[in-house]
Length: 98
Image (tube, rainbow, N blue to C red; front, side, top):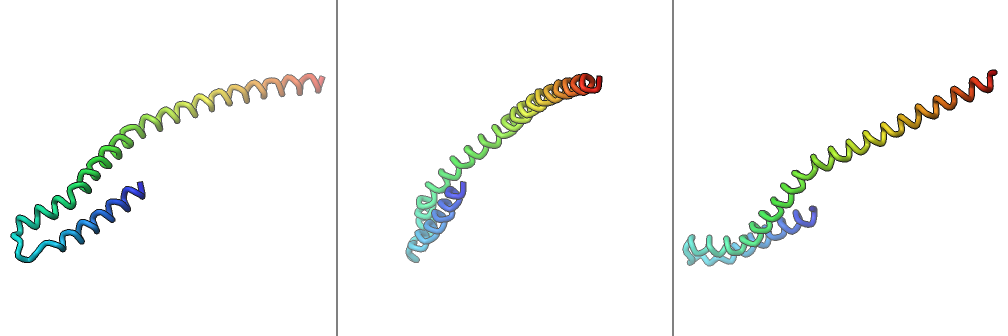
């Protein structure tokens, strides 16, 4: 993700440097078109990145809930094992005392 941000910043800086090449004699419309053409690939890449972020954000709650339910199952299993060990320890203690 950091690489994407660095790339975007670099592209914006590069686009600004390209926009300075507009001649003073050019009309504002021609210079704007040139600048838009220089920045258009960056804008398209931003749209792609936005879609990726949205898909990651959509997946995250589902993944988190599945991980939580898996951890709850493991805790229940461990709780059952601990109860069994406690029961066996109590039996051993009563046998030792008798």
